[in-house]
Image (cartoon, rainbow over all chains, first blue to last red):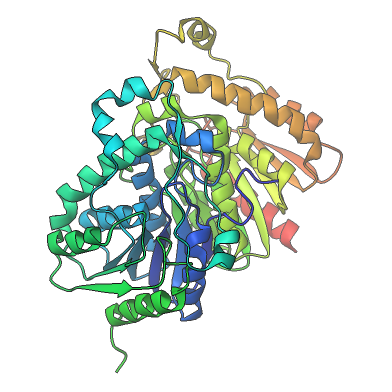
Length: 255
Length: 250
């Protein structure tokens, strides 16, 4: 018996001296990154997929979580990979992308991949941020937006909390502000991938991230026929191939 | 913005198909078991030391911690090792030892090394007072240091205070462990300092008695304080842990 949702456990796949740190999104689990991880490990990378604090356990745990806890969870993964790898590429989905970019702004990483990552939040309820401490006393969970899956079989075995913790929404609001502050400090090579079918985070976020990051070497890739969870939805193979080709480009040439 | 205290980072030392999960104690950090992990890795093991939630960041983070969060951090490490290892040993100091027994009662664990593990709440007379003051007092300074090796004390990465509400969580973890000890069927090595004044050696005997009959052993360590893998007798602790793992793996 584990405390962690079966199938949503963090993972470690040993491999070569190139490390990939995979970070899942808000209310998600390591499972949404596992298939990308398997693909990268199959190509010889060492892969670690962290579990962010309060995720993949019980929804109520999210009420105690603060965004700095999630930064610390992501940093844990970076430190765990240090000994096994000469270079680490950090990559994340949605809020995991925010965390990957924050790590890249602060730590020596070889590259960063931001998938379906928000730059700001269009949710009008977040204008209530100044009242958060009061509101969260009695308003604990909010409904999530409509699902936007294009591959219904994958959608059926996806694991995440069914509701959005209101306190977590506040933390998301704050970590987005931190992201906008730190983005110019991201100078490593960067890959941004976004789906035009993403109903959770608008494509303008991807454009804003690319525009504001300090990196000279940056690339924006669009996919067409996927929802928010591009690591699992219909065009996942294309996403895996783009990420792997980016990682390959950061390895020293053996010639 | 680096949130983890320098030196207190979690670690993963790659090695062979024997995995060692190393769990630090309350208010401490992975630094407490890092050298032990190095030692076991030098014997061919894959060693992983996770950071328990709320540790090695800000003491205030522990105000939000529940003991299940610490157990989940330990599970994380177990799952990461599981992918690379045929067998996983769990080693823990103090609260880390408590968590090690929780894991062994629930998961496929090859063996447990419990160091300075409490069977009851620590014997600090101030703790009783604190329970009464808990709604008012958030932090309390730790007692005077009692290191046999003052040099080791200097390298330590740990909070200087106890977050008071978290003390009750430690106690819950200990009481829950008592109920689960009977389900621990793997080999167990218990180590305790004869001079441990924080968690007296009688705790080791109590855990030994509560474990089911089987492959279990006790080892008393002289010339050390509560923090066995850091203080003066650490080499003896390292050797005993490595011998136990070598013997059980054979």
